[in-house]
Image 1 (cartoon, helix red, strand yellow):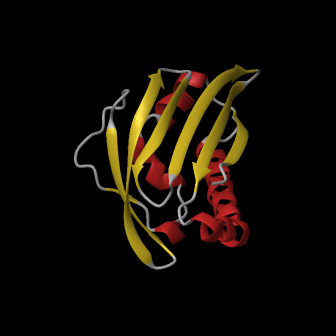
Image 2 (tube, helix red, strand yellow):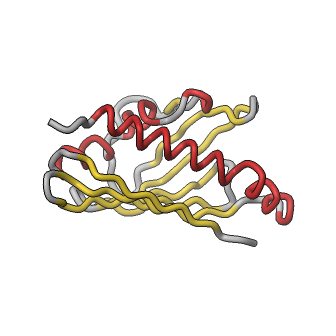
Length: 152
């Protein structure tokens, strides 16, 4: 089974503490997720992010609704956190978010390792659809982050 990787970097012209605070608030994920996914957090109430926190989502992909549950695996305030899929569309989903001081702001990185189910059919789906779809999702995130955190 193929393990795929997606890596993105983005400069945000704001202090690291401010950028980290935004990304460590799970409720902000809806604002940076494209509408075509119909993405909604279903975990009730406020979500205190820490290692072990569970977050439930509902989304629709190609018209098919499904649930997704992630667990915060690591949480190091102002530096990094990672989440893993416990239930959802992937065989494996491990997403690491890192934040670094940079001149005039923060450099943040997203690194995702993922595997698809369905063996050879998953490999074909990745080549035809999934790779491009994930690219579009992370392009949307990049653009929304640039709007939310404009240069002064």
